[in-house]
Image (cartoon, rainbow, N blue to C red):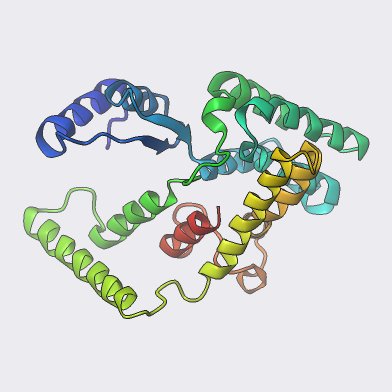
Length: 277
């Protein structure tokens, strides 16, 4: 949508409900943190539970960290890097324990002589106070991100190459997309792996998160230990982002981790992030 206002979303959702999907009753809504969109989705689908997209939180935290001038510190100080990764996995905690986890991260930084005060202030002010732990927590959620949808949108942009194609170009490109997905479906039906043998890595990553979550519930590990364990789940993503921002040779960067919009093969990498997160 070109106009991302409350009124625009209201009209669009009303049209969809009345004309396209009259019986649509979503049970879970995963979205980014665009206020107008979140407000209208909750209004139109009041029985659905909603939570934010974990990737969008991490993307925002990374950009803010860089804007505040902490990139050099993170790149050269292992404890600053670990503090950042712990902050990025904070949404993996239950909502009621997120603030406790946030305090643990700040204490970890202080103990190790790391000054990320402005980043912590931003996180507390925006994510904990304005958005709130209930919306940022992805604890025990089946879908922690909406990157599969974002990936499809990116595929549409790459296919159409314009925001306003004529009707013939639109129909032609839709048919091409449909054909490409039918091929993938047939490959899956025939037992072929269409994920380039990378899915196992992300299943292992998901298992790490679920194991740590279970250990936390059972009281076998502390919140600090949980955050340290789960921090490895964002290691590849963080390395990729750091390499891009520091202009490190692409060959030295781990494969199959998400790039910012407009860089690299975002389709596969967003899907990979979704599989692993």
